[in-house]
Image 1: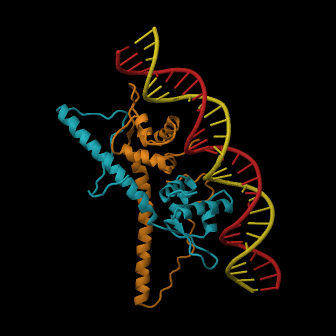
Image 2: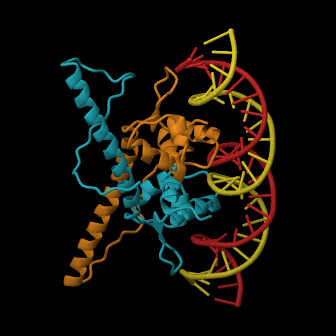
Image 3: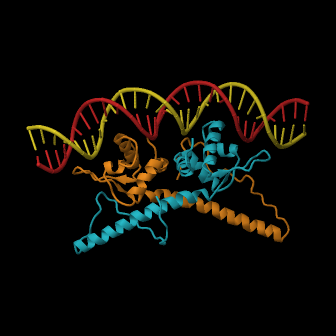
Length: 132
Length: 132
DNA sequence: ACAGTTTTCAACCACTAAGTTGAAAACTGA
DNA sequence: TCAGTTTTCAACTTAGTGGTTGAAAACTGT
């Protein structure tokens, strides 16, 4: 299917096994069989997972001599990262604005945020152009 | 199914329609019908998407009087963010270390670097790779 | 109370995704 | 060359997802 890259990246990481593979690959490269070893599934299943990660661009494997190593491609994370940051920042700005308004409205009162969730504030630079 | 939160968050964002909803919600809250309006699918389908986002904790809707607004929950992004950052950072460090090694090799005599099989990091037998 | 909108539930269909088994390539080391 | 491991392809089963239609709750304004 003509699924866009971002969708493939998110979908790839939606599986715990795949996330575990990524976690282990972030420590060291590995061959497929090395990767497969801790899991209780067949080698073929692992290979399939690997394909998903590969199609998402999260992983690459230089084809050549036999023990083809699997390695993480760090820059695939950037796609997600910029997407997330853009939207997250917008919400946080809106909340900050809202907080300001509320504060102004009722001089001082610890305004609680319902069922135990506040909003996390996160340091951040400023810039980012716009697009959905 | 007892899928962990992180998986649900990633899965929720793996769909372009759902990402678009999040994008629009990052601008302003909206009712379901407002949300549904630009899409060519039925209202019920939009509800289903909404439910996925809600189950993932990406969105909340205070239940009360009728036009129930849908609002983004910024802190759900933090889960993804910390996960990503942890691993991304590790890879980047490894790459930097590799660069250093290569540089040293070029300048000096070749140094044998046995990056070969250390110990498998994950103790075997874990039947569900419930990842950090 | 009633018409109308908004929200939700439930059954169903087509399609994808995760896993299996079985077998074929492809490479490695004597 | 040949045995053995490693990697890949293919068919199939099972469960989940995105979408539909149809109808039922729940709330609104008059």
